[in-house]
Image (cartoon, rainbow, N blue to C red; front, side):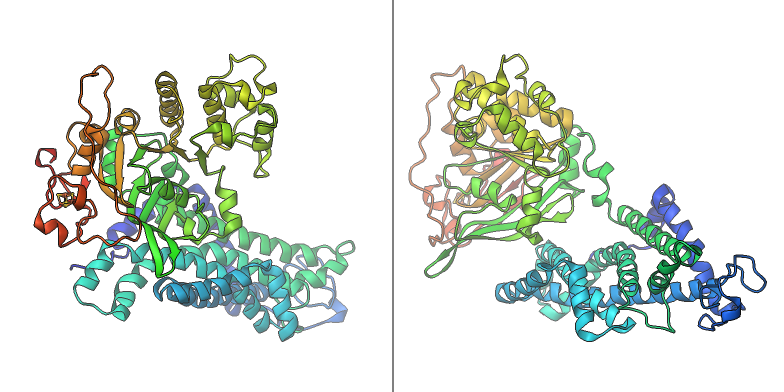
Length: 629
Ligand code: SF4
């Protein structure tokens, strides 16, 4: 089927998942613990237990193993075991109902935002932002205060407070699905939007939603208990674990069992659900597995293979676009950029000035110039970055994705010694840095420089400054390093040293590197793969060696022709006549056609797509240079 949905796990996938689950000790422990708690709780109606609400002042505070009361009685003479089992049933039911409600409402909002166009997206997400601006527990408290205490209102409050979480997560996933080829294929096959959502989107959304719900259920149970503990949930004579804990706290010093038992049961429930949820997430979605995402680098060929086969990638960019607000509507500066980057892989983005490579790099960090906006999907280790708010993105920058600037003299503060700047960087992000200052200095090969920490930036050479900038970028052990023309301002010898350093960091520490440059020959030495950009689009995506020796796109060939080669002073440098089209400028057909020596009539009729040429190469050209295949 042209636009078929990805199959839900079938029996084969189920067998694989079961095998993985058996090898996941934390998930197994969670499952065992949950079974231990759930079995008696579910069996409560079948057990001959006393009425949990029946008081008997004559038999109050009986110790465990008293006749007729296995765990004793509470301060009103009620059977503790019966109250615990029935209370746990209530806590679990309310938590599960709140999870289902939040998931259902959040999914509808997230789906509508991702599918309903920019205006609806903006409207819904601003609403979600407003809800997220309140700490969720405060929001839940405010809702219960407005509606009045009671279990139904507590459930409603918890569900409402968690809707934004589901809405954002579902929106991110649907945006990702929306740009998949099978959605385009379903449209081409003539299917309407409702059918595409029902048949293509929802089945693909289901596994993610299931994972979100299992990882959230534990928190919902805890939040329900929290509201009941404060007297806002279950009201007497009904009881749940939170209200039992609240009643028992008065007797903590005289008869602690009344508070300790419900507290212990809440702890067991939440820990077991969370362990199982985390385990299921690892088992069902391998992208979340740290072992897989951040493993040591595989050989270059294997990495390329896994990428081309669509395996789990550290960075997955899908249909990324950057637009500027213009008088006549949005002006696209970057459009339809899609690529993947694996841990330990070095990928270059090359092109002339103004082709959109720096905009592409900055948009990965959510750093865009004033008036610019971005569309598409950017996923880092499975996490959708486009769905993150400013605070979450700030937390990510420097910690998971770091940036090495073109000119460190302007990036380093000239008024502060390098030691002070390094100290500030190391103390950023609250949690401890991945390395000490001494380790960073050794890593970038500056350990032989006397008095380094006491020097000001202008007291270093260009190469040393760039090493300092790289050391600062590495401070929190980022998974992805973006180097934007990081060697352009350096002389040739120092360029080579910095390239060797970046390559070593990638190989030894499995860091991914996105290297932005205008120099095709230079990046071919450093990177395994090169993305060539022209006028805001990727026009060729190929292994570096293949691109260097057999470019397929006429623009890649022109870039190579204009690159001087060491040892070939006689090589004539070709000049590419003309200018690339300005962003938003209308060009019929291929945007390179006005400058292309191979252009034909067909080129001006239709803009070529980025199509596969051979096994490992993608080219946006109707008449690629044939020897390349
Ligand atoms: S599609 Fe035509 S104009 Fe565009 S690059 Fe290919 S040959 Fe040149």
